[in-house]
Length: 363
Image (cartoon, rainbow, N blue to C red; front, side, top):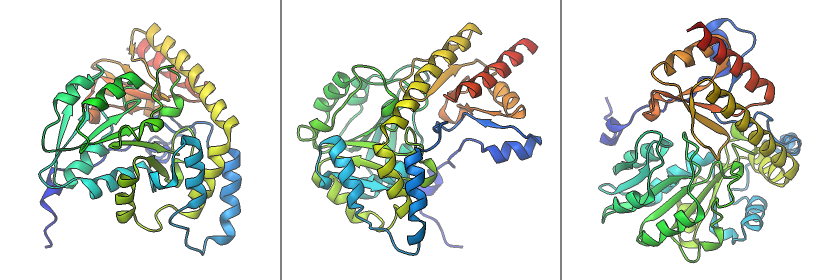
């Protein structure tokens, strides 16, 4: 038997949310609603769908690995050079490329906890140690995060807004933190849900990349742009950081359809505005109704809410699944008394709330 790398013994399998087909087949249901994976309930932009169909005649051709049109669109939006942009097959691949380019055996990487598990996965798979700072539903102090940095630290991961809690750090908090971080430590600021944030002090830091060349701002087309199925993400950073990542980037990882749909979706401001408005209203409704039932809802700047149900949280998740509603239990995040609920369409939110009320009434 071929022995795998020893680092693999430290890794746990990624636990994804359950799919609609899985629940439909398990319980023999016709109607299943999924509010578990923070997808856009409005779907992709109509313009992105149109662009996707137009690419069909050239599927036999390799995509341009350097994606010049997409890089130009991103550069214009953020006011950066195209040489400051990296793209990947979803944000997961960008995180993986950061690991391959910068994380060495014997290093450590630091992250707020609980948070997205791929940061830890990438750290451990590259032979480094992951140091988590924080616990449960409380917002992790960036001062504590800064204190954890030592001579072995290579990357600090900050998900903002954070998954699964929805909490966020303001621009002043992030800038103050950056001032405390040595320039040889990469600060990976994951803004997968940034387009949903409505807080006036939410960070806009692309203009500060010259001041903080170790800042790495990660974004995705999976969430507000509704392109999770095409797998495409991007990031902006210093030219030196990005140049190193292009060296280890697979040449054809972002396919033609993903590039075309991303460009079109990026420009569809109406679709983004409609998604954002629906999300804000959904947060108000779900927060009000869950709190009226006696549950605690954490403040959020994302497209989901984190709800403390208590010791019966797992029971609620199972009950909902058996009745055609999928939400995310957070045991794998170290929060067994909490659930995460993606904001859906009004009728989907109403379906969820009716089931939760029935479950609580029936005891």
